Length: 202
Image (cartoon, rainbow, N blue to C red; front, side, top):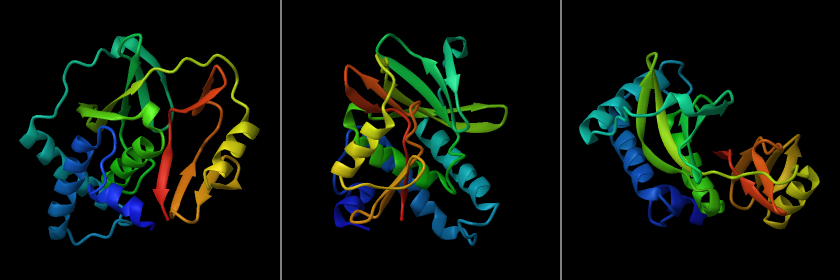
């Protein structure tokens, strides 16, 4: 892993809206020392979620007042609600990740690489016994269809190589970025906006 990426994840290098994300990571990393489960164990995520809920209670981070009537859309990983004309709220249960720490790392990397669509971790929400992170993000209106060839060109110019479909890797940084299809990368007046990123550390 590249040293700069390590500093971002550890909190030595600051990114936009990183404070709340780093605080959640620190708590989970501190509390995980008592766990005997490997991250790949199917029970690990459930145990980690219980530890996360202890942190949420301790810091009073439960959000109760999400207006579910402002529903916009959803994918496999999150539900999207309009907050106002400038921003959306997304509920994400970290289903794409083996751990919550991996999900929070994704937020940090998104905010480092794409600060114009940075995620602000507001708190957490529970519905039907599912725990969701609540993040706010700027609302981006697409003015034209995204050209995936342009996305590939942009990614290559920033050191990311296409490995399959819409997935990329930056070998120098040790970072994988997946699922960059035209619903996750929007175009507004010729500018690309990455609104749903899926980052992994190699």
